[in-house]
Structures are given as C-alpha cells and as structure tokens.
Length: 483
Ligand code: ZN
Ligand code: MN
Image (cartoon, rainbow, N blue to C red; front, side, top):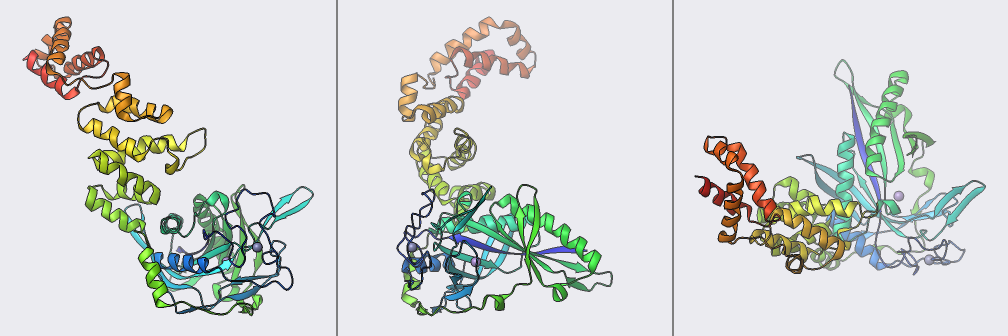
C-alpha cells in the first residue's frame, strides 16, 4: 500500500514599500524591466545591504499569524549559488536562526478540520525573473531583492486536496494578516511540493521512497496535479528499483503546466552544497519582547477565528462562514452589509451567489470585491427593502442589476422605476377578484380539491401587477375570496 507524505515550502512576497536590503520600490509589478534597481540589488561589488526593519516586522506579523514562536534573535546567512537571475552569486536568507519557528495552521478539507505543523518561516531576498525567448533569455531585476517569507511545513499532508487546502489557508492568512498580497498570477506566492510515499509491505513493515521536490508551482490546481502525477512516478520507480529515501535521497524537479508532467532539474543537493555561512555584512537582529507584543496587538482577527464568530454571531452554517472569511475583504463587506440588511443569511446568499457571479465575469476579468460597483451599504439597503416588504425578492434581482450597471441607491432606483411592492390590501383584492372572475373554471377546480391550480391564479395576479404585489398577501387574499 502506498500513502503520500507531503510537505510544502511556500514563498510569499511581503508587501513592504521597499525591498529587503535597499530603498528600491518593492511594489513594482508591471513596471518596465530593470528600472527599480540599484547597486545593492544588482549585486555590484562593494555594495552593502541595510536591513529594512519593515520586513522584520512583517516577518514577525506573519509568523504570529501562523501560530509561530518568535525567537529573541534572528540572523541572515549567505546561501551560495550561481544563476543568471541572481547577480550577487549568493542569496541572503535565514538558515539556522529564522524569524519564526514551530507554528501550526488549521483549515478545513470539506467539513473535516485538519492541522499542519509549521517548521519555520524565514526571510530571504528574491531573485530576478528570467524570460526565455526564441533567440536567448531576458532578465528583469526589478524583482531581485524583494522580500520573501519562506514558510516551511512539516510533512503532515497525505493527499492532493489536503495540500491544496493548506496552501489556500496559508494564502488567506498572508492576506488577512496584512503581510502580503499573495497574488498567484503575479508570482507573489509560489509553492515547492515535497513528496514521497510511505510503502506498507505485506509483513506490515514500512519504508519511505526517495523524495521529490517539485519547485515553483504557481496555482492551487497544479498542487493537486503534481501530487497525483508524482505519486504515480514514485510508485512506479519504487516497484522497479526498490530504492528508498536512505539509498537514493532527493531529486529536484520542475513542473510543466502545459503537458502536466514533471521533469528532472537536479539530484542530491543538500545544505552543504550551498556553503551557508553567517552574512558578514549584516549583524544579528535582537527581537525585543516589547516589539513582539506590539505586533501581536496589531494582528487582525484570522480567517478561521472569524468564521467561528460568524457562525455564532450571525447564525450562518460553517460552509457559509468559511466562504465569506477566506478573503478578509469579503468578510468586511459582509459584516458591513449584514449590519444594514437585518438578515445575515440572506446577505451571505446575495454575496456568494449574485455578487460573486458578477465579480467573476466582468468583461472576462475577475474583480476584487473592493472594486465592486455595488457597495456593501447599497447591498445591505437593498436586502433591508426586501425585509421590510417594500420590494419582492424577484424585483430585488432587477434592482441589483440596475445598481451593478448604472449605480444608484436601491431606494432611488425603486422610486424612479415605480417598483415598490404593492401591499395595499384593497388594491390587491381588486386584482384578485378580477382574476377570479376571468378564471371561473380554474376556481371550480380548486374548490373541487385541485390545489395545484392555485399557483396559476397567483401567477396571473403577479402578472397583472407587474410582479409588484406582495406575494404573501396575494396568497392570503385569493384563498379568502375562493373559499
Ligand atoms: Zn535596489
Ligand atoms: Mn527559498
């Protein structure tokens, strides 16, 4: 029997204004290549790095959000390797004194709660970006020197969906804590998947297959695909060779998103190959307990805690609460709207169905909820109009569309279009009587016990009132008149 053992290393860009060791713009995505550079991030001889204390603060903040301890001292080390996108010939990273250690992340896979231990979250600078073109390769160093947190999990996961849910939970934590934007399309969060198989033999004993590390995955879907693909490769190799972790070690692979397959990059590299040593140009950093306390006090409510509160405070079920709290901007929108609407469950439904549908297909490009043309206040007011009986749920759909396309408050739209629900009993009774007079045969059927025909009469009243009659009252009055 084969059981996957999975650990993730997640690189998350921290959203400070400037880079890790120089004053260059850290939020330069989309700029012309190589304009946000200086001698430090270009690795020129004689340059000296200076630690951006904002990065240390974000590193502490993220560490706390991941449930980590923050050691009193952290330190940077040199990791020596050459690559064309790495101009200094080494990376400045944290080897044996990371900013955060020993955390834990909880999340749901379906309705089952899982936890993954965090070994460490350390700080390091990013490399530049290579683009391979037909007649060579191009390098953009705008990204060189941008600050990353590398979040290293313990190998606690055992399936693709679990690894994916963990990665999504970490992104949610990075964003909601205010540590980074974690936009996958922009490479602000990237995943390395470590995978091996635990093999249970017929006699009950177990061995572990060699480990594969698949580097630089940039989508959640690909995490699952990698686990499926590479599990099959490891199983096949084990059956053919019998090699284990002890006899074969680790292979580093890349992921081809087009062919959905892995390819070998290198094998058997270990820490000694990088000749790590303490960065001679930077002093160790003492992290005072006051600083940790101060940052702890800034830590916002985290996604799962907020989901729990939504369940108890707003009577949502867990699934609803989780769908609102993965993004803190969505959760904020919900809370604002729910305060005004007087109906949290209906507010949740409007957001997760109608609003999400609109946001996801505006000109084929997804919008963030913060860019929604309908504000949380407008949606809340619209739902309040349903609650007070001023408009029906059906008319609300039209109001929603007008708000989305043309803007305006729900009250003024209802007023202008004359969409106010008719709750005047006399007016409704008159229309009901009219419909009864015109449909004597149906009325006889209903009197003869054929209840299903009743809906047809309700439909006719709604049609005659352009959908504006209060449906509850129509039902009541029709029943009264027929009996
Ligand atoms: Zn620079
Ligand atoms: Mn790294």
